[in-house]
Amino acid sequence: MHKDILKVVLIGDGGVGKTSLRNQYIHKKFTNAYKATIGADFITKEVETDDGKKVMMQIWDTAGQERFQSLGVAYYRGADACVLVYDVNNFLSFQHLERWREDFLKQSSLPTEEARHFPLLMIGNKIDIDDRVVSRRQARAWAEIHSSDKMQIPCFEASAKNGDNVEKAFAHIAKMVKIPQMELDMVDIVAAKKKDKL
Ligand code: G3D
Ligand code: MG
Figure 1 (cartoon, helix red, strand yellow):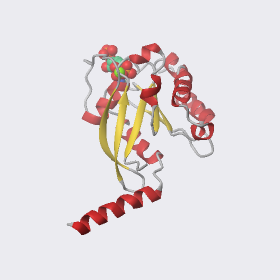
Figure 2 (cartoon, rainbow, N blue to C red):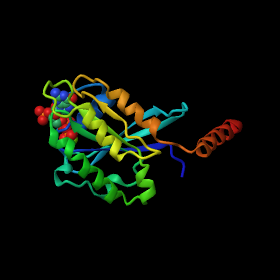
Figure 3 (spheres, rainbow, N blue to C red):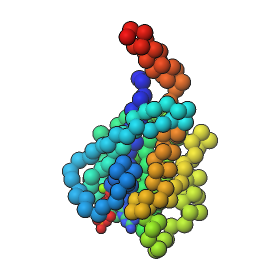
Figure 4 (tube, rainbow, N blue to C red):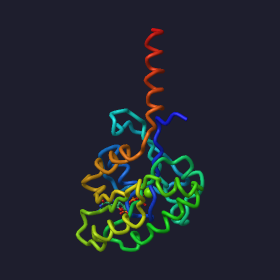
């Protein structure tokens, strides 16, 4: 299957700032007037991969069902990367990353080997608030435990409120997902053929 769409799912406790992060990344703005709606939705944005290819990043957000502590199969199905979000000022939201990771592994039913190398990224949000209880060291230690030889979990700290590091964290996702060279070559061939016909 040709992968020119990257499905990225945001997971983490309610209130950690998933919706705000996505809004900051897509619209470069922060507002605290979001309404929890039912279901999930996604927004797409064009991003560049490590080797300069343009792909569409489809960012999924839960819109509130994380309160049921599980996001269901449909949310995770076909995901290419998973962003684990916690609030650096809320220790429980950091502890719950374990549970969110497990929910993802269970619902996505990836084969063990694939699950071990699946692209995960952590964002500790709300660094603009001066009440930190989760240190960078703790976050890195957790990431280290769940990383594998082929997949290191990057840890970002960000603020959806003032935009710090948000662009950087999302841009990094595109660089983590490996698109097989063969598929990229195919895109070039198809594009070249189209041009010939014109
Ligand atoms: P969620 O989608 O993970 O449930 P939201 O989280 O994006 O809805 O954010 C939950 C609350 O945290 C919102 O406040 C939002 O404004 C606030 N928030 C999100 N990110 C940040 C941040 O980086 N800094 C600060 N200071 N606040 C943030 P309300 O008051 O609407 O509940
Ligand atoms: Mg939300």
